[in-house]
Image (cartoon, rainbow, N blue to C red; front, side):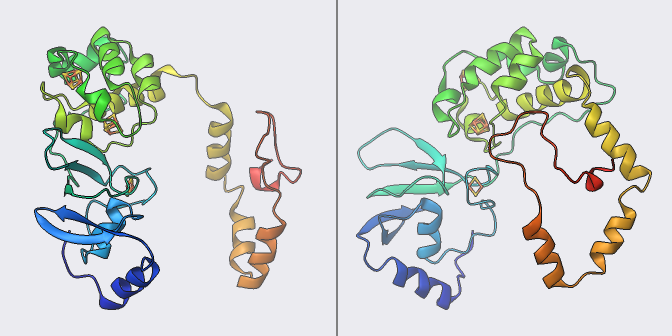
Length: 259
Ligand code: SF4
Ligand code: SF4
Ligand code: FES
């Protein structure tokens, strides 16, 4: 995070927020007054910071904006995603754009998809004391302790399913007294699960084979030759999948499916 935001952007944000009530927040110890309607991320920008790290999707998906904060008079350290957490008066804020957690290196192709693999690559998993701090810290409301318990038991499928919504923000690891890196343990399980345990998606294999056989090359060349207006027209006319569709839904025109 560097404090070099361009003036026009800052002025525009200030105009937009002119009606909002200003509240004091402290960013790495320095006091700013920011509109109370802003998320921490927008408040940082309003205060003049340019976010070059610790900011990605801005929508609660990428996990880049892990942030810790505290209120005066409270001993409690609180955590959240900066893009999802609205400022409150007197928040003391610091971001954790990167957490230097242990990360095992492995070749997923040759890794045995058995429970012991988790413990072999991350032996610290057995140090978990079951305090539940990870679960209380998770902005995605994941029961982190539950999937770590399953990792200790070697239940790869349960870890994969239990951690599915993890955005890898690192906040659980930042607070763990046993120095676990829960999200790396979880992604190992999801990789083992996806590579070795779930049945192969036959339709995907078929589609990859069609790509390899150049089934889409002609259509691609035709599209590349079209003007922007023609492409827009085609795009608008595309048959899209309904919001609620059964597993067997396919478009009427299957030419782009290589069929
Ligand atoms: S914070 Fe660490 S020690 Fe506590 S339950 Fe979670 S993984 Fe276990
Ligand atoms: S499990 Fe940990 S890394 Fe994943 S979203 Fe929750 S706090 Fe973030
Ligand atoms: S910026 Fe992606 S989760 Fe906040």
